[in-house]
Image (cartoon, rainbow, N blue to C red; front, top):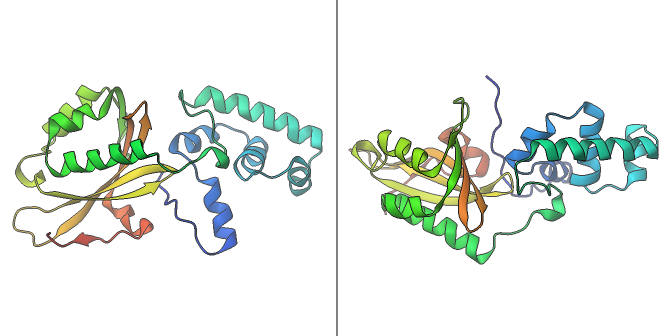
Length: 226
């Protein structure tokens, strides 16, 4: 099964790789752009994501200026139909560093997870939270239902009670790398990467990927006990 993967936001040294990295924006954008025909997709990425001028885009794609303008307008309409609220600005210029409040929220998310503090963790989530774990099908909708699924799955008890976390970024969003130390193990092992979407001062979306992606982000596969 093919499914979307997280992408590190660090900028590579190679200029061609930097250009490719600029195309990688939020997960919601990647999903929405797949609805575009090939020409509209190419124009949107060159014009809106990479910031190319219309003439350069037209020359590169072998199109007229009128064709580029028309394709971009149609692509923007389609994108707005498929992007959730609050995700309507996908340009490279729209991406920004985390604010102080967002950094505090991510830090609180880490502390609550490591402390197994379900009450605090729940308070950091929006009531309409969306949670997904690709490649598993479906999306959990709602904070209470999601937290209940975590607890029912064992979070905070048994072999899922000793965690350490590191922070990074993925797809233009903050991300938290989760490491789990099971009973009897001398080290914390890579477990999952939570990519967070923040809205109105709370965590509004969580997309969780397996620990196999840690190497893409330069994250170690193991952590020693503190």
